[in-house]
Amino acid sequence: MAQLLFNLFAVFTLVTAAGVVLNKNVVNAAMCLLLTLVGVAGLFVALNAYLLAFILLLVYAGAVVALFLFIIMLLDTKGDQRPGLKHLSLIARAIALALVAGGVVSFFVRSRLPEPSLGATPALGAELKLYAYQLFTTYLLPVQVIGFLLLIAMLGVIVLSKKFDGLEDIK
Amino acid sequence: MIGPSLHAYLAISALLFALGFLGVLIRRNTLVVFMCLELMLVASTLALVTFSRFNGTMDGNVFVFFILTVAAAEVAVGLAIIVALFRKRHTIQVDELNSLKN
Image 1 (cartoon, each protein chain N blue to C red):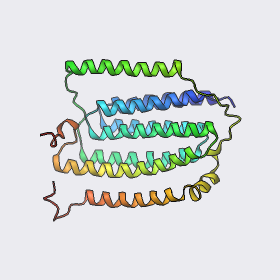
Image 2: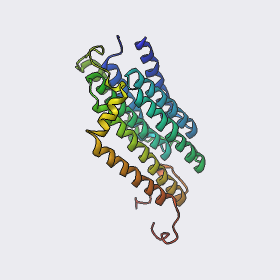
Image 3: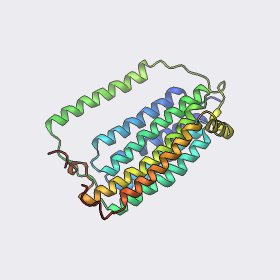
Image 4: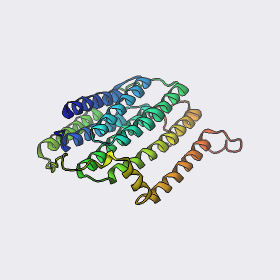
């Protein structure tokens, strides 16, 4: 059952990710990104990280993709126009493709990873209490830094998107 | 419980990252390039959660927590930059944004 769900979500994630890359229409690409995130959240659930799956859906699929869609509609952009292939770029593509294929083949054939059994290792990511404990003891300083970062990002976005009268000469 | 192996999860993560990288390389629209960056970020979080699960530790999960927060901030700032760019240049195609070139 777990294997079946994993296969389902893995294929779904990869197909929709390919959709993000290959879609000509920007809105369709954003929708594919949404589906990819749903697939990754499914994989998180398969890894017993329920809270992270929930946050991924809430923050990414809820907020980030919606923000992308807003900007797409605001800017009203056209899709890609592919430039013609030049001779040099054809060679470069062939080399890059060969390198990627070599990497994938060597990953599947030669990689030696330990195979820990999932039954023996405890699924710590499933327990909410542990997140809270870690965030407020070991990672207390990073939490503060992240809060500060969010504040700075908010101020930065306001400065970037607001039109100031005196700043028009800065280009 | 017999589930998928460490290998399988890492392969998915690597392929997702490769797809995002491919998109960054071949797409011309800045918004799509940005979406592909997000794909790469999500692929790396998948690897972190996988290692955390298979090692029985908590650190990877908490790290993913922070990555998601930073990613949200990054998307907000990046999209604001793209909007500012569009206001000034009236295009977001990567080829046409070459004012630093000459």
